[in-house]
Length: 263
Image (tube, helix red, strand yellow):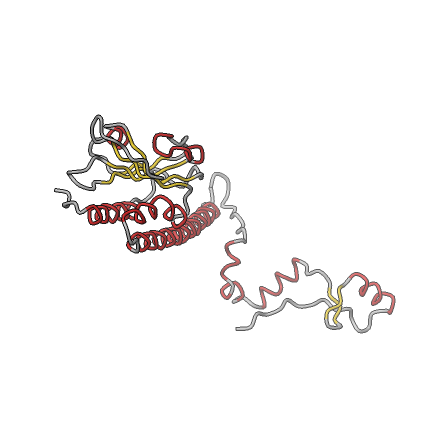
């Protein structure tokens, strides 16, 4: 139904020329009609002539303030308080809806990045390319600043061959960070650990540390994701996608190294 317009106040036809001229100065011209500000009495008169107006425009009820009713001394009218409470609840629901939509979009974007990262890992044509993909490409794909792999020293006297992005951790480091039965740790607003991120530790303000259970025949390993954004990882964050990524890495490591599955 087309929206009704409020009546315009026009200068009477029989008004003196001087009055018409003054009215023209104070009003605004719109299509040749002389316009003046609408008064409260005019709005009230219009609503009386069109009682269905508010029913056709219910959104106006959210911004209008209903009058408090005088019930006499010692009597409190709760109508106004109820209306204000309903408005507050509506505002909270709108905010909750917006938060849910934003969270859903963020989760969908993260899911797409993880899927792309897994495809990049599966496209590796050699073990060296596979490791390089983890320590270089994943940071770009996952919108992070640094990704590393930490492997605990297997035994005293074992020679360690340095590899970019892969670092040797002290024995017991993974359990010390995650706990004996822990698999994943999310930390926010931290200073990056040089033992985990080496020279890039200064960039890290939040991180995700994930245990890699590659095989019973290999030492404990750690996948470390670091970001310069202090809230990129936090304790209340969902971890399903990160856990899935770590399981893919474990399986792929075993395939490349021809190792048996974890028992």
